[in-house]
Image 1 (cartoon, rainbow, N blue to C red):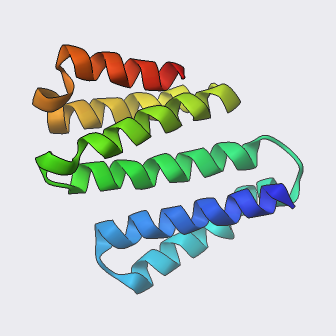
Image 2 (cartoon, helix red, strand yellow):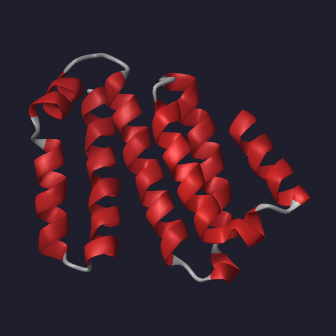
Amino acid sequence: LLCSILTATGVYNLRRAARRVTRSGSAAFVAAGMYAFSPLIWNNATQAEVFALNNFFICLITHVTVLYLGRPDASRNGHAYWGAFLCGLGLTNQHTLVFYVLVIVLASLASGWRRLLRPMQILLLVLLVLL
């Protein structure tokens, strides 16, 4: 049951991210539906394994990344902090998430390197990942 709930919550976060990117509710619904009903995701949702939790973290990190990349500079730090915390939390579950996190970190640094590459920001982000 928990795997199904985690997958459904992940699909919901993925739909929210797709809605923000495409600005179309129907496109977001179709994208989330294709993800949810794909054989691998469906299989992970019906079995008691760790992959549903990994899929949940990937969808949630995707949503936070879309929020971070779509905000003006003044309100971005909160999403960066949440993203760092979720990346650290996700890496405790499945270490293959490091490949996804690497791309997210590079995209975040390319988008807001002036704000993120300050000593206190780096320290806080690293502490949130390690927390």
